[in-house]
Image (cartoon, rainbow, N blue to C red; front, top):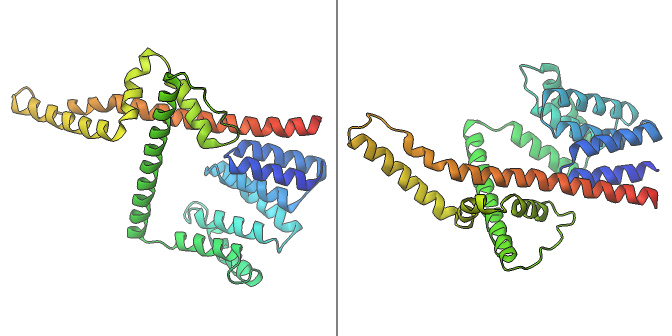
Length: 272
């Protein structure tokens, strides 16, 4: 198989979060076709996406091997710079210092307005943030995550209602969001999960009511003299946490299924 085919498959798998599958595909391409800067970039990005020290070391090795073959490859330079900017200057001082050199090389090679320069600006802007910037970014991420969870809850509730009416579920195909909804519907089947289905169907109201009941129970226990200080009321959040855990598990399961479908399509193309 040609290098380009391997690179295209790495791109497809990376887009759906199949980082382990990207590494497997890139390594297969390197074994078959020999050293290649594009495949080494995909290998490095698939390691870096795991955001762990061992994977970061493997990513750096892949980037350096790729740059030894193609010193002016902008994709490799920018990806390596992003890894260096993300590295802790105390634990990995040499890697963190290398970011300045890599940034200069990218700015020399990439024209203003190019995608590579935009990635550099985004990465350096992130790395140069202060404490309050980090707080604002974290708050924005939190809002985005809550909105995503609320949207997922709505989609899951709609799918459960359609299933209760006997309507057939559409094939999720290679859409990670649709696959996550389909997985959630499966995980929430049965009488034992009926309370969780109800909570997800009315997620916002459930959180408001649970807070009110938890706060009220804690105050009642203190005012009654039974306890001087109470946290027992917060146990009422357990069902909500269980429902959220179902959604997280469904998201992981959906991603795994989509990656498996993409890999199956690749395998079918090889055997056709």
